[in-house]
Length: 427
Picture (tube, rainbow, N blue to C red):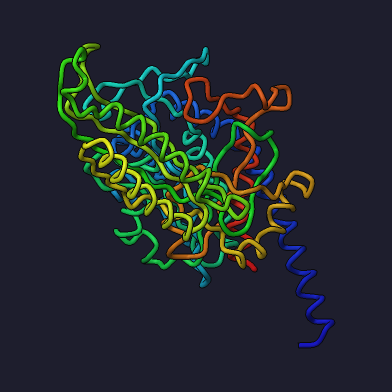
């Protein structure tokens, strides 16, 4: 192949890209109002993990209206649709998570949630406190855009609406792991997958991404401590699980501060809940604690697991108590394939502008998108959700009652996901 012909091909590809860039831009603007309306409905009607019954019905209804034949009931409440332009080519998957959180919304939005659900046997308020309502609506918008362009598309696009990203209820399976086990990445076989997350800490119009590990592996754990009950006035007759737990918590905190080489990668161990006792003058017989481990390095993860088990046993022994710890399988590191990252980085800069694409540092949040990435090359990235007139330092965090991201952030999400799909399929 001579140099002139190679230059001609590059020119031809650039010409084609400019052509569908303009089409995507036009269609995204055309459907933005509709996508915002969808977002408001999903936001006002959130449902908890593995209970997204009305959410999945609404997704399927919209997909059918566009022209798709969606499959439902995948990994309990997931929805999958396939766009086939009828030409041979690779298969690209685009994913959105669809579940809400047990959080009570604190806002004056006309479309704020007042819904409730059942969580761990209790009735709780439910809110889209992490932006999954925007993720659903963005992907539906992309499905609508690409459906209009399907005559230009070689290969296939698989749209994955995934339940239970926030974690399946206790005793249940769910989320990306279950979708993978049920074969969502096959028939047709997916060659690459893309996912996004809207952020309440980045400005609208911006994209944040990095190669390799972008989000941490996560493991939840439970510690059970058994002592001997006694009257609070006679603690010498007890084996006090509360004192044991207090010492255990302090000792566990030294794992990260004294055992981890933090110049290499971040790590976190947090105790998030402690349950024990019923009144002020009774030393209880037992209690349990719940916590989370976040790691970006596999060897550090192994070391933390080993150290926490040692500390739990030895602290209990020192206090004449008994203790057990169970650490779950958790999620792997959300790992952006370096080759796919290099291949698609020009797409991000072309869509958002080079000045609006930030190469970020890894964060200790976690995402079960990582289960898809264990099977096929994948890219996960963040889009900004905060308008220019809002001070980011005053913006509420994810998973909190005041969490907010603006409708205007979804336009870039639609354009980026649609362009990533076409660039991958046409390159």
